[in-house]
Structures are given as structure tokens and as C-alpha cells.
Image (cartoon, rainbow, N blue to C red; front, side, top):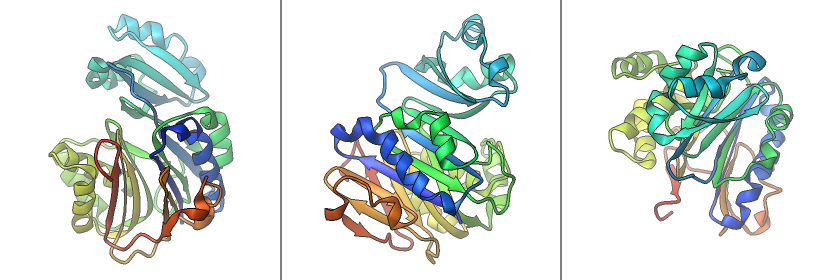
Length: 301
């Protein structure tokens, strides 16, 4: 039993409020998963720039002088430290090499997510504490997803928390359990994917990344997941400009959605949505089993 929330903004006037709205939605879901929590925020894109969110168990040591060491390694960067995480802004051209550089100069640092717009913050602890330590309420953006976890099959660690990001500007949160993740992980490793954990949800994220690398959009990749993933799942997924939801054919995990002219929202339960602006006139529905819901800022809804 985990709690998932998501918010895709259509109205740019709401973008400064994204962090606050998403934080309140996630905190409402605390009793669905008290061991760890995380949020992915998609912000506005700066031309020619990319962002890498990293985490350290010893941020005082690992983040001190990191900007200087990156310059020495040929990667000029601006760094914003937020508690155990830091957001590294670099030229987009350096994104493909940044993991190798960080492994060399800061081997204990772990990448939470990277891309042109995504920032991911996740840690063990309650949603209210995770939101506060990373100042999520002050963040604006176009869309975001969040997760509060009750671990059932893997360790309670920062890396085991959601969202999982396995591709640039991609991330996934999951409520449920996959039964074929070990076989699928082996297939994806053979295709060149790498994994940080034994979590089945990371396999789902990597599957979508691999499918989109073949030229599929998010909606098409989620459609393929209905055939290729076995088990119980509700996924909410983000890309640079998109937001998708899918439930398995049995759909035993709770889910509710709402849509207005201003936004599309997802919650594991309706109470996660009750304080959104205009919710009283929203179209509210339970997403159908084995049905893909997909919105994209660059395409028609």
C-alpha cells in the first residue's frame, strides 16, 4: 500500500504554486506509506542547460568544492545544495558524460535524476519532513509527481524510494507489485540498461525508458507495458513535457483522477485532490483498467 499523487498544469498561472499544491496532496497520503517519500518537479527549461539532481549520505563532504572539481574535470557547473541533495546545472552538451565524471570525482554521490527540466528529491521519512527539508513548496513548474512508500519487497533506503528515473527527464511512481521483474531486468541489462536497486518499480521505469528510446511516445510505451509487465500496478509517469497514468487489467490498486481547464490531477484517493483549486467543478473519475491516460504539453490532450 503506497500513496501516489500527480499534477499536470494546463494553466501557466498555477505554475508558481506547483510545489505547494503537490506537497499538500502528498502529505494527505502519508498513512498509505510512512517509510519514505519523494517528489519530481518539472520546471521551465533554460536554453542550452541541463540539470542533474544528486544525493549524498555525507553532503557536507561530498558537496564541498564540487563546483571547483567539476570545472577541473572540464564541466563548468552551478550548484544549489538542498540538504542531502544538490542540483547541478551544466551545459546540456555535458549531460551524456556527467555520470562518468561524478563517478570519478565523487564516487559516493548518487544521481537521482537528470535532464533539461526534472528535479527529484527523495529520502526516508514522512512526506511532511521530506517536503520541508527540500523546500519543495517554494518550487514552481509545469507538472510533477510524488510518492509515499510502504516497502513490501525491498529495503527502506533513499535509493529504494520513488520516483525512479532511468532516462533523461523521465520518472515513474508505482503502487503495486510486479511478478516478472527479475526476468525483465535481465533482458533490459542485456539491452544496455543499468540498475541501482533490486526494486521492481525501477524495472518498470527502465522498461519505459527502453521503449521510448525505440521511438515510442509515453502513451505508446505505457500501452506496451500492459502486455509486457505482469502483476498489480498503478503507474504515474512523467516526461519532459508529458504525464501518463495506467492501471493493470485487474486494477485492484485505488486511483482517482480529476480534470479542469487548469489541470489534470491524480491521487490514490480522492482526499488527495480535495484542496485543489476548482475541484468542486472538476470532472472526477476512476481511471479504467488497462487504459492509458496521457497528456503532453507539446501535443493535444
